Length: 64
Image 1 (cartoon, helix red, strand yellow):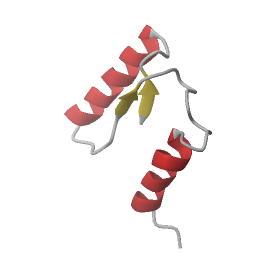
Image 2 (cartoon, rainbow, N blue to C red; image 1 turned 120 degrees about the vertical axis):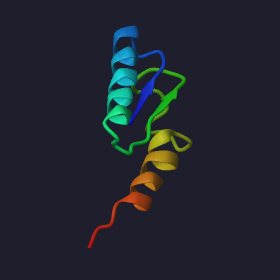
Image 3 (tube, rainbow, N blue to C red; image 1 turned 180 degrees about the vertical axis):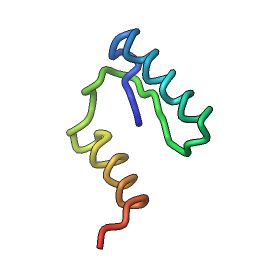
């Protein structure tokens, strides 16, 4: 999961709390807070979708 640091105080606190709850429950997960809002630099050629998200799913998901 990831979230933008400037997406709003309530949203960022809730994301951080959810990540902590997963950790406390022993659930392996990845989390990242990035600079920007919820939609910052997602679809650009140097954005998160093509450079981080797709490679993450390619590595961790196995489609048959």
